[in-house]
Length: 631
Image (cartoon, rainbow, N blue to C red; front, side, top):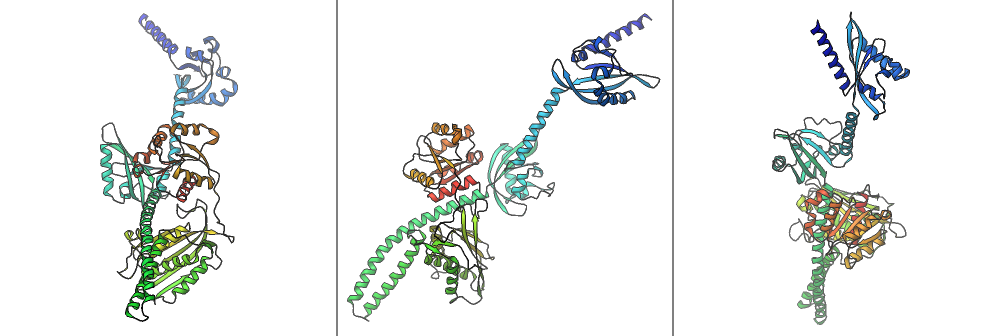
């Protein structure tokens, strides 16, 4: 008996020890909702002692409203034999408002009836706050993934898709309702074997730029994308998954290709123009001496007839050199307000006199058209060359040439070409059903003396002249062609009102921070930008740049760096911006071609654009407008 009493006493002391030293709030509640036992932690939370709580009802301790609405229903369920778990919060004198996880357990059954319950309350405030912080961070990352214009996707090691964000769907042309469970990213490579090469590179170096890669959209269209890969391994060392970041740089590639093509044409034009000038001087001497010789020779003599043939040949040669000078823009056009519809009609009427059988010309232009400021004779030459070019492409099988015209206002959001100046343009399209052109031919069609016709059947200057005349008008030429499916030439010429004034969209007030030496080329460009309506501030060093950026009331919209400062070259500017995190668009005008190919800068500074010297004011103004409007 004594041993049994000793064991019971030991059990009570052990229970009291556990009860009073627990980090949880513990209490024993009777069927009458009365606290019969409470521990020290519960008393501490209520700033009282056992005598203040033991013997009192739950209603007296927690208040009638709280007891009836929140506590009593749960206690009743527990007294019926159910373990009840819930969370509740209240103010504590020690730590203020705290959140507790409460567990009610049935206790001490007698004759099938629960006589008591054990209530345990654990402080979970820090846990819930940490969970809330994690959820907030996760939500921020999800928002970032949804909002960024960069595509993110996760794949298995073999390319099977796990996840992609909305931007990736948009870049790859995948509809929102398309289920991607069976999609393999490797199959979206234009060259499927390249995916295996990329994964091999990532196994050697888990994080790396994969450069520009040709991908296929869901519709089968090829696009140029900049890829960055990140290979993740699990604890066992095997590949868990691969993350890819995708940026659509098709437009960037298009701009660079146009830039290279424009520089090529400019170089060829300068060379051809210089030769044409010198050749004209030689022809002038031949022409003059031949004319004098004819005057000194008997009319009708053999020598006289030979001299006349020389004069005729010189005239044809001067016509060719004039076309070269037109292409190279060494001849200024005499511009007046012109109705292009009338010129198109006159050109068609002229061509109808020798139009081959089986070829049809459909004129869909309107009689009521916007005027353009041009030399009507030169405009006639443009239309005539394009029509003749289409006729030659459709011979001998025949076909149809459709000429259409529309007036479109380019506001920055709907420019057909990124190099168009904003404002109202007249778009004239010549579409034929001829042979079409291969890509290699398409890239060279504006080069002087380049022709696909047989020897002696063409000079190769027709489209070169077209390019030179339209460029002189401040216009653009877009060409699309497919072998066997015909070609389409679209001219875009800025329109003018009846008074001969340009209908050009006025630019909004913009601030440019120009980093340059402010002399020679940079001085002229700065003057031109100010005359175009931009507000300019200047800096010549890194300190000057940072000082300008510290003035909150004059933060620039764009940084323009005209490379040429020995103490602050463009390379140093890019390093400074990468280090300081300056979040502004940047236009770098440089003569260093190698600077553009720096993949490091292209990956980290997505808002940096480059122009290669020499540049014209028009090119700089167009680039500034494209960057500021984002289109």
